[in-house]
Image (cartoon, rainbow, N blue to C red):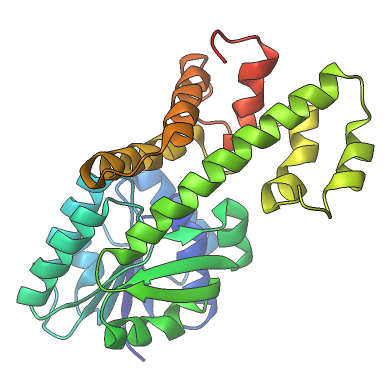
Length: 291
């Protein structure tokens, strides 16, 4: 069995690496923060925890990564490339700009290393339950090689196209989510202001045209004011920054996305950067300035 390395043990990476270990793969892991690495080691005592990227990827045939932002993804990938043998495969689950994915894919190709940009959707719950959706960009052969590994924690794996297109699909995903969440926040706000039973409203509308994953999974917690879980506002703003940068480069017009990005900025300014993205409703409830 091919030796694996998993780089990044954050909210998403730790359960993903855990699923690989549970599936019986020989995997070593690394995380920049020793505390997270120690926490992972406590849960999976048989998995080697490396102190460096170099040590983690030594002898690995496949490396999977899930880190923070473009600079993190670039730094980790380049260090891994420098310590991998030709013929290895690098799968990047980090949500990055398509531009960076294409650049890293070109560098990997020069080194004889396969590349798949494979951002995920499904949030913390999807990672913990092994039900993520993975959007893949890369050569068909590289995606096919990665697929059996991704199946350890993914319910859906789709190759979008060549390198960078996985990240492109993730941008589209985040635009759709941002719009739905703003609509859901306003719907909840109106329901409360109108004195409606929010549970009854959910029962009435969740299976019709207004229904969505966000409504099914976030309506009840929004009504209770519970936001200490899920996909953090800080990460959504990072993703929307990438989206809006791409929009400027391509001439795409995303007025609603730009507005929701500003609304998330309001939530951050009130100290809500680590709250779930459904916390958009708090901005309405406290009467923030603007629309």
